[in-house]
Image 1 (cartoon, rainbow, N blue to C red):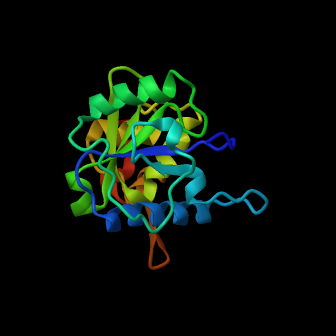
Image 2 (cartoon, rainbow, N blue to C red):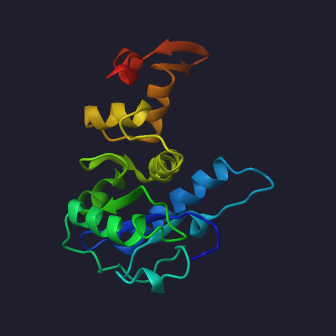
Length: 196
């Protein structure tokens, strides 16, 4: 994939229903729609690739809905094993078409709560945070732009071990401030969250 686009690899370490993979891709498209620049349109296949083989050279495009088969190439592997494979086959080779410092992992929990592990490989040891499908690509874009997972909101969520959702990310970024019934309110639990 030498089209100049950087896609976030998605690895499935257990059997994931195609409906869950479709939902991840739909959430990605919604994120891209929300932040789309009029003259620069990216779609899900430009930003996400579900890894269905260990032969990286055979992957010719990103992923799109509908997903026809649940990928099995990485089923049974640990996150550390995937990180090692990713480092050897994508990061060290500078493989075109992929983000080189982050990836997503879908596991058994992904099926029940529509979340995934976001893994950043810039720092050692391996670091990850659990996030909803809605914010998965957003984390990848921030990491791909050079931010460490230890910094900012990602670091606070990682240290707290809370699942990053779109709603609680917004609360954290706004210092717990939100609007309700025309009034400004403060959620004390989120007020100092970014200081963790």
